Image (cartoon, rainbow, N blue to C red):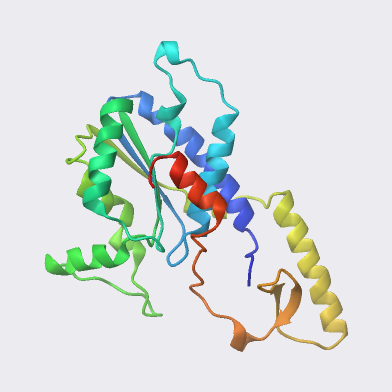
Length: 240
């Protein structure tokens, strides 16, 4: 499938969630905020949420004369499963941002750097629990907390906040884009049923509705990190 029902809504809601959370960086000095976003194997939602948040940020007015700069509310790092994290290099970069902006805001896909986390846990003799499907239990691993513990002291953070937007996003009503997709999917499903066709209804990789066979469906489809908007965003925030 090329598009999951609810993905657009989740990105929009995640951006709204962080807009409120980001205000916390005004309550103390040298504040590290980690926004942990759904995505075990795919970083699309984290990337899209970051894009949506930054689009909204552009519409806000700031007063630099009162030490209220847009950069303080911006995203300073985006970590997704498809891109390896050079933790030592990032610590150096984030330390410079912390010194200048008095805060660091990170968008973290819950599956980003999971191999490093598991390796670190096992090296310290900690058991890594798995669910019934053999997947690492991310709630037990707690990637946001692990990252905070790994970098907070090294960037001299005085206050650390890790927030997960998953439940907030999943409970939201669909936005207009998703409503249109839902209605078109349902319409296609009814017509397919009347024609006695079966399968999972959705958009294929060519953005066409079809009855997709169960044998053709696979989980863990990666996000295309070569798309222009993603790389432009990383360049804008100074990550590349």
